[in-house]
Image (tube, rainbow, N blue to C red):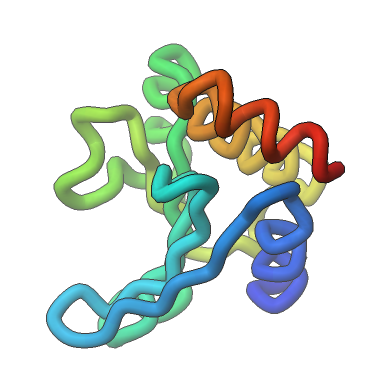
Length: 120
């Protein structure tokens, strides 16, 4: 899966919004109801590195693998950064992104959750 396919996948979720922040953060983020579930770094030296939130167990498992590291500033919330998304198994990556989306969705109020699930 390349970065364009991954962006399309992130956009495909109900209620997903895309937001590009310029300097100093330089990120392209995907969120649901102001809760971020994924983002790309859009500037050098880490251009197109992809970050998502994972479970505590997967955080430990994944950060032991080459090409995956704790996300800068967000690692304390179990966010990881994947240096090259094309090196990841596509189905596994989709599972991770889906979980991150669901985690963000679950942190919304029940009213907002119902709003997004009714629109599917």
